[in-house]
Amino acid sequence: MKGWSGAAPSGPESDSCSTLVQSRFFGFFLSSSVFPTVPCSWTLQNPDPRRYTIFIKVTKPTEGCMPSQLRIFQYESFLETTRTYLGMESFDEVVKLCEVSVPVGFLEAGKQFLQIRKGLPHSGVEIQDADGNFKTEYLVVGKRNPSMAACQMLCQWLEDCLSSSTSNRPCGIMQIPCQCWDPPPQLSASDGCFHNGVYMESCKSSSNENGKDEVNAGWSVWGRWAQCSSECGGGIQTRTRTCQSPPEESFLCEGVVEEGQPCNALSCT
Image (cartoon, rainbow, N blue to C red; front, top):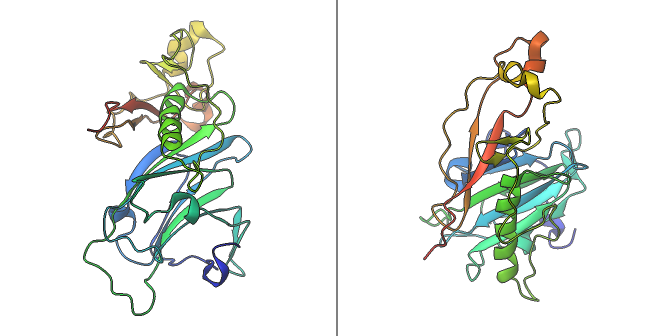
């Protein structure tokens, strides 16, 4: 693969320091918590590449970044027998994690897995005191009928991505399943997937509006909103609920276990 040659990963950097994120449509992490040591890896799984696309926003480290240590790539699957990745494609040149002239990087991934890994430094390279901490936010967005919360965030990401792109550094987001309005249209709260001002990801409207209370009876109350992923410039916050019905009555839990909404939209000054 171009740009990787002999340095292409042939298997997980570490079996003891790895994070696999599944069944999540949005979230964020700080590298200091996900990569407490080296080598480590963080992997996000696309639930169905035919129906969803992964979008990533990386706020780059301001110091202590070592390009040889950090790799970002997507792949279709991993073979345990040969310890190799299938369909691997590097995103190193798209994000350019250690290029601080552009503080934020974006990318779009359409394969089954996206992985960020931090490996050991090259022989003879001293590890700096500054750990090169960076923040990663992610959205897993439906290709058809994406949620309003996801589109609001994705439209802001696309605007920021395009504003910083050049011929030598093109935007890493190529296509989004949203139409970006300014201002957004007024949407009806009668939609079964509209809840407290938020359109929910992967939601199915109830076919029996008269039995709405009965349908919702299986759910717990929504938990508190989590901390916003950004202090300014637009972030996303999530909350969850649990299905309290027994398996034979799972039909009472129609909808999703997690929802999100934009937050802290004021620009950073």
